[in-house]
Length: 453
Image (cartoon, rainbow, N blue to C red):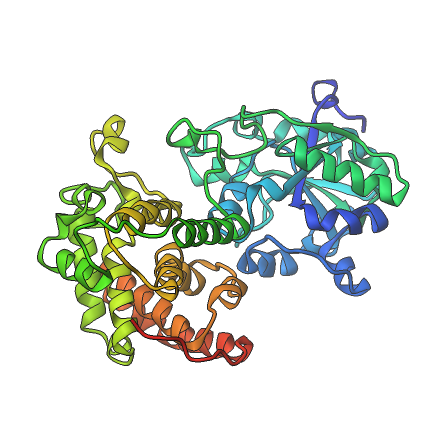
């Protein structure tokens, strides 16, 4: 049956990491199962749990098989799955490109579509006849809202166009990118391959295909910082502090005195003072940010992980615990939310950036190793917890751990943070954390012992 006229001008979108583009130009867009059979290298940004369901979900029409026998596209320009992928912190959103095909590819004998996302425990309805396109929930598909009234509508928004095994790049109508810099990379890849590049679209900060922090604060940055720019922020912060140095006229001599100050007066720094009484609308937090921070410090000091650290590393880890959430402030940031701090997946990035002022203005001296470690602990205090609890990539910990000492400090602060929110979490995840530590230790090369404070 022909495609109803009201849908003929529409497109469907497949988003992927730009590192996959070279292979896509060479081989076309391949289904997951065809990638496996051909041994193609592919940067995956998908949830492993969802992928397991798609690997088993049977397709009831067209060529049949399972969902992983098909190349997936969403009818919606910006899916909830995109938000999930970005929030997982396994990819920087800037590196995601959106490949668009016209809906008329449904004229292909091997193209089908689903009534909802093909990633749930109960399969959606699959269709092979374009005449049934009107049965899709187009109000949900075209909605700009992230929170739809029901789970059914959320899944209906992510209805999929599925093409069996292969989509050659010649069938792409256009590619949507983050900015002109990424557009140039795309053009260069096509040029190197001697293949004509599709049109490249960039819709600015309207957010049609991307998620910006305007979702919260009116910013034009990605809603969450991924691994590349997190590492870059840590390195820039570290280098800035090392290059600028400390304040010879500061009232605090060193990090030991800074730690003593915060033990006796948590509000002794402008950044920590802003956390006192800062209430949160995060349902996981039962207390204000200042009280939570002190609970993390207490849990850390009482932990066996802390007891095994040497004295220098104890000081650094405890100081990082006092400072790990300063990025949730200041209170003025949340004036438009009734003074309640919103859930902020990027607070660790803000915290390490705020560390610059503290370490260059508030103290007279600090050793280079302490700068490096303190910045790392603050920037990555949530990494271990995210890996074992939210499917963040373990490779990120392998890339930044540095040494066994630093790895144990990162684990100690993460477990204390987890314990302060739910004492059962570190217990439930103990085996996973132990396995993660063993995995990272296998990757770490021998590192010379470093000077203590």
